[in-house]
Image (tube, rainbow, N blue to C red; front, side, top):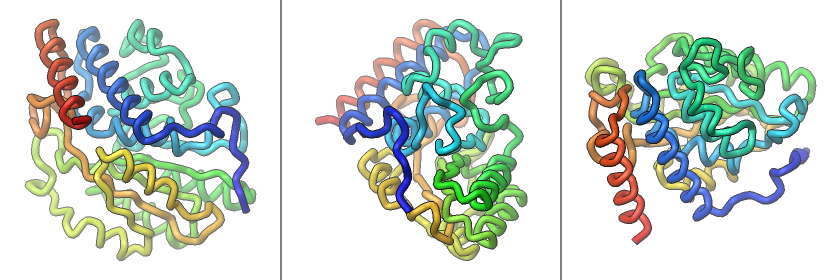
Length: 292
């Protein structure tokens, strides 16, 4: 059964256009990190920027002008501390303005909190932030859609660190047991936790085999290769199929800014004027190197 494309989704971006959008997203992230007085979870935002871009500008069947359309895909940000990256990706997609994020981010009663709130910000499907909860919520949403006979997908983005929690694996089991082919998980596999590298605290490997053991369709990609992200999205099974899919995206925390990459000090932080200038220059140099 084919899915009905919603308004604005019939003209998909090319890989080259998506790469440009991901670069713009990272620029905007750094600018916000340089203007906000508190800490921004910049490391994990930068690692997931390509995934957010591929989803909101290519993969998700959503219409920013009709956010309640029952045929829309649902997106759940399980790694809720990456909310600002999601906000900016949504702003670039047309849900709301980037300027509004910059002006009010993190302030009391702002719609743009450090973690997403569906009550404060229409267009957000789930309030998240407590790690390990996003995939269980996505399972419930996918199961509800299956009972109604709906065609949409439920897509959940997790950080690899939170998959050390038992609630995630209960949800993984439930997703397969209920034959939820409309459920898709993306894992931002940057291999870092807040204060350590992942394998130092929790042994995840063999990581893809753990998902396979629970009966999921497993796709392994370079999470910074836009062509691989697009190919993974294009190859997703029909939502009416029986097996959920996980896309394990190998990423680098702090991607694009050399002094942040794989640096535990940049799980969260802020940028002064000089650091912002240095970060933007590093990002531009990284982009130039990739396009040569």
